[in-house]
Image (cartoon, rainbow, N blue to C red; front, side):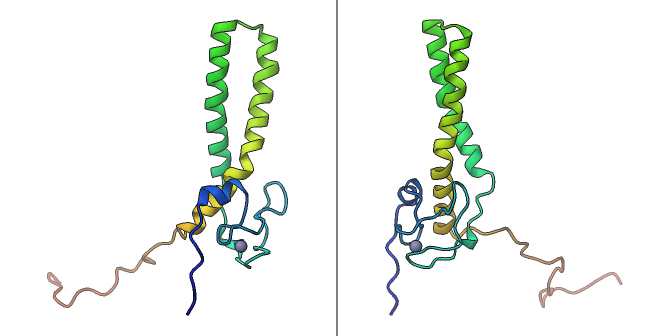
Length: 139
Ligand SMILES: [Zn+2]
């Protein structure tokens, strides 16, 4: 009898950038390059393709947080424009780069948990066999 792997939190393994099945093996071989498979359990990472999702979530989350803090800071302290550029642009860059890898790992873990795969057509264009009760009329 095969014992199923324990269910791991996709958010937890994602934030640790670990394998979504065992939670031990590294997911990345480079900054954003997903490894071929897990070194601990052998899971093939070929299913992993979060596409532009990590960039979207990183830019959106960091953009909302940084611009909110920037707006409050600018409205209350009235810093000079050079100081705003000197703080906000690096904050956006560092924030996006720091969150991109964990967000990508989290999305890969979600793909694994939900068995996500590329969409396929249920039909290949044929309408299938007509039910037996169907009778063609008019010809
Ligand atoms: Zn693994």
